[in-house]
Length: 133
Image: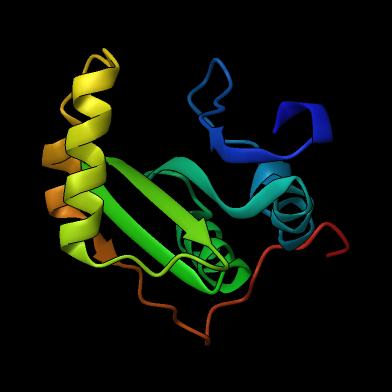
């Protein structure tokens, strides 16, 4: 759906040379902008590292920005998936990951990651990141 300016997936993996993730790419407003560019069943995927001083706030802002959120972790990296329309079961995610592994050479095993995927738990007591704050 590129012609319409809508995307099935928006993948965020943005870090500075010092290994810091820009706060502007973790705000409520940024995720609203991402949502406006997604197809009806599109998802946003982002990668955060847990040594970031605002890791908890970034995680909870992501969680609060989407109706359905999932996560998996490896080492200090945490990958989050968010959607407003797609509530997947673990089996559905694994089947989709297997198809993608067969179709694309991603350099890592997506099926193994899908097996680790869990629903992200929101903690409403943590302040969310906003561009206006």
